[in-house]
Length: 143
Image 1 (cartoon, rainbow, N blue to C red):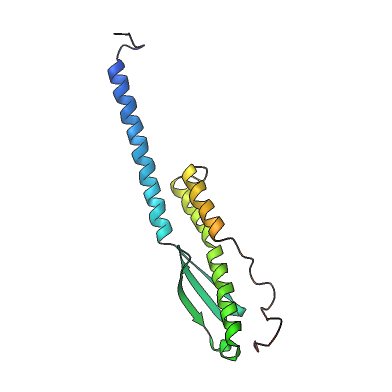
Image 2 (tube, rainbow, N blue to C red):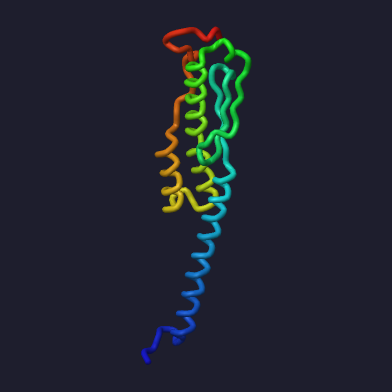
């Protein structure tokens, strides 16, 4: 049998395998924590000066919609357009939250973080906040 520097080949191999397995278990636990944090996330945005508020789950699905009485003066297509616009803004806030959770759990530069954050960035691009009053080019909402 070949001589291992330090003399204990079997012991060194066993310590290496134990260390490797512990590292994998640790990474799996951090990935599970990231998954749990992401699953619990939501994001909210508002538009039309607070007349429309949308909350989305981490999946991007709308979980809450709040409309104030100002929307009663709008046409149905204007309401729909504003709700969709605000929903996209709420969805666009998810990648930053996911990136923060990834940095805290698996590390911002890890392959896992890059994959998860990249997926959110491609599905839910950031949308600029409303810079104009949100009036449509035609019609008037009476805001």
